[in-house]
Length: 314
Image 1 (cartoon, rainbow, N blue to C red):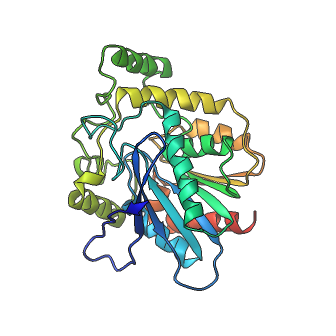
Image 2: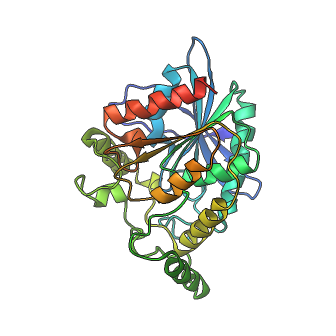
C-alpha cells in the first residue's frame, strides 16, 4: 500500500480523502480513496462501488453526506479507469479482459478495509456497473450487512438493438482483433461524455449544478476520465448480466433505486431482480435520470434518506 493522489477543485471546502495505491494479485495497480469521520458516534462503513467511466473524486459529495452520518467510506477506481492501471495501450476506451477480473479489485478492497480497520457493520453502495460487480461480489460472499444499489447494471439498455445482435457484433470484433476498440454508440475513444454532451440532452442528471461540477472535474483532471466502452467490454458485460439474471438473490436486506427517466441500464432487469429479492425494496423515483446520487437536491435527499433507513433497520 502506498500513498496516491486525490484531486479537489480549488473552491471545494471539504476535507480530502486519503488515497492509496494497492497492487492486485494479478499485478494491476488500483487506487482507493477513504473518507473517515473526525469524531462522534461511528455507525459503520460503506464500500462504494462506482460505475463505468467513474473515479473516486466524483463521489466526494456522497462521501461527505455519509461521513456526516457517522460512516467511514471506501471507494475504488476499477481497473481500467480513474487512476488505476489502464488495461491496453490506448487508455481511452473502457476495457476489460474478463468481467470476473473486477472481483480481484473487490478482494483488494476487502483486504484494505481490514487493514484500515474500518468499523463494522459494512454496507455496500453500488452504482450502475458497480451494481453488476456488487451483485457478483455478494454471490461470492462479500462481507456486508446490507446492499444499496443506484440504477444497477443488471441489464443494459440497448435501445433498438437486440441483445443477440449486439453480442454478435462485439464477439466478431474481438475475433478480428478489434476487441479493444470503442463500440459504436458507446462514445468514441477520445470522447468524455460530460464534455461532449449538452446538459439538456444528458442521460445522467437534471441538476445543473451537479452537471457543472462533473464538467469542471473532467476539464481539470482529464487523466481520470475514459471514453466509450470497448467491444470486449460490451461482450463481457452482456454475458455477465445474463449470468447474474439466473442466480438466486442474496439474503442481504436490499434497496435499489430506479429513475423514471432511466435510459442507460435496463429498467426491466431491475424490476425483475427486485421482485425476486426477499427483503428487497424498490424505490422508483419520478423524474430521476441515471445518477440519482447526483440528481436534484430533493431527489438526492429521498434516496439518501431511504439508504440510511436501510442501513439502520437491517
